[in-house]
Image 1: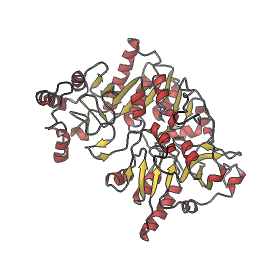
Image 2: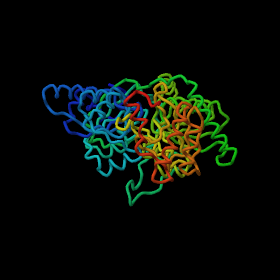
Image 3: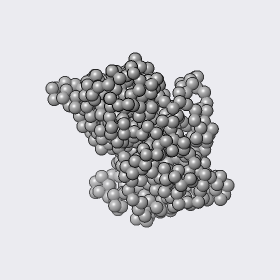
Image 4: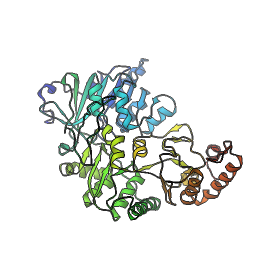
Length: 504
């Protein structure tokens, strides 16, 4: 038995993943730990998938609701999605099999702002939470849970679930102890809410451990399995250009006095381009940086190592295998510089606005007026979800979006006349950046935004078609505030679906 299970009363609850999965019943809602491929249960989901498959082979109904912190991994989302046994999924996912079940209508999916997930669970909008399945680094002598590489929704799920299963994963470093800051808000729901007592990104306001009612715990599973750690792509010319344009913008903001020399707390979305921006900061002139974000990627660890970043606050890691190994080997060292919080704290709108966070997120496409689509492909197909980008975009001091100007080898323009789905409206989007340049939309009325975006961000192959669309829209629109020709506004998307390219 693992030496990581130090609470005597839990030792007789250790069992196999199969035996623990057999305790799950058809129709249950299950809250799993996990956020961007870190800190998710590794054994129980696959064992549960086998049980669901067996039930389906016998002609029996077996479907569950799956709630998480954010995306997980093939061992969780993928394994359960392939059974067809997920009835409902929230709030964010990125697994190909899970995406397929959503887009084929097998599973319902609710794309929820990550800061909203906790209050919606607490208010019962998602229904009864029957079970929480939480990964732990260890269980203390007092029966408290030392979280692993993400916090996410764990505190909320432990509070509201009828039953709890804990996976104790020896792969996770015991040096993580002390990195977590588990704050339980006083008066979590209106009208009893109190201000979040965070003044700076590094403030610690909670406990080092998660509390759990011992009577709820029905099983303990021992594992030794790594997180889903995916290598980042090598930086290409477009990524470097995007990062360079963003750094030039920050430098200009400092020069004109709108930002201090050490900037304001940084938020970075997940992915290769976001990581490229962090790498650009490593080579840039800024010092004594701080970060108040939701995910810590390789570039942020490198910034910490360099001394340019003094503290990073988040709710989870999203690391390459090499960076994950370094984190495991040196977790105790990093625990002095990294704070992992529940996602209703890491993504808290009031804290983001008060500290003046600089938000930088990826997107699928933007239109000429500054509306951004982060989630949908060609109108109907869900890609991943909005995640926490809305929390930071709507409340940040600066809200910026980055993307290459084209996709699919140039067949798709990421700057279009009208986005096929709106996640972030023109009222929230301040800066759009591609490898072509940067459009600062602050202070610009819609028609002036259109000119700035086309001139600075669109690919040369699409600049003239976009300008022609603007001329057509100004002739046919029923008003000149935001001119659109409704008959052709989504024509570029239709052309792609019919011919395989947006190009004329």
